[in-house]
Image (cartoon, rainbow, N blue to C red; front, side, top):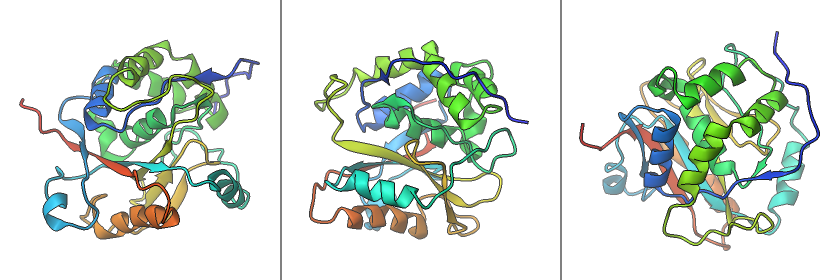
Length: 252
């Protein structure tokens, strides 16, 4: 049976947005308690074999940052209207999904989705901030998980410390919407299927068994999923970026 934290009335909560930067995302991993063998790296091309070969493998998660088309909210609302509200909880879930209730925190949610699912989860150090949070959050309903994340001062501090770093301009005014959104793609450790993970959806989106056996999330079918996101915004802003979660290139 799933657990529930009683809902309480609270003001809107906003975080500073994260820069799409593998160094920042990796440092946030470390601050949350993910061990050094795992790190984020840039994916510089979806098509060029030489550039794809530079990405450390296997890739256990993808974080895609994409600009918002003018009709983004309308298109999202139309798509979401056809989907049921996700109510999963507990270790039996095919994937661990986090509903987003914190403004400007889609980067944090993408990171959590990547590292909480599949093989990546085994790199979370016991007793760490993230391990303790997951122990609390996984038995909860999606709404109660969101409240638990709002209440985590340790995760909030780690996020703040890294969101205030970086080279690009990011507004720290909660009234200013960031120029893009983060979505994660993961491979379920339970059924091997690929999922689109975005906290502002009604739940995880099952993309099917599109990853061939023995392949990772940098395989051609997974790259085609990312290309589809880009085609959807053709002719508009082209400031897309993609981060891959995989082996670290840091010196031991």
